[in-house]
Image (cartoon, rainbow, N blue to C red):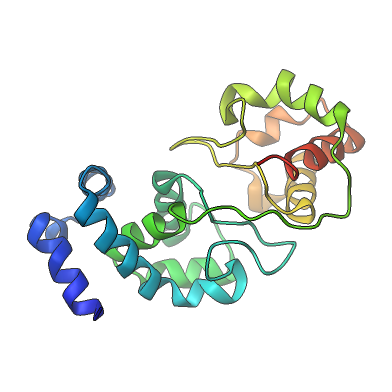
Length: 209
């Protein structure tokens, strides 16, 4: 279906969407779309069309093509949208994502977030086995924010099933207080953990469904 037609379908169901400018308004629009099956189907289709620039790294279905890049599949839609906003405003920085986020309109960010949230995570081969120690550490340190299944919520990301290389590298950035991640609450969380413990957590998470 033509992208213009899809856009008109969404706007006919939610006429305020095209006028929404603030983050709160866009989040409210997203909630209304998610509550309306017809609007959600149209938004997901529109998101697939607008997410074409994301596919070369994150995969067409949101399952990363590169081990050092995160999956977006099955990520919480509100969390994804908020990260788009963070990259667009400079709260988070990344050479590619910062530029891309600024090129997308608010409704486009909503549609892309809904599209990737709708995709399933696929199992992938990983270089490590699941760590029992990692399970114990996760259940004692991480579950309070990311949940018992590590699927996260609107505030905290889904980390279950992420590539091991990505998980390990990201946790090490938190441990070493990398400026790129300096504003994350994870910096404080991991300071009492060792590199080996963080690797154990990563090896547990990467095998979680």
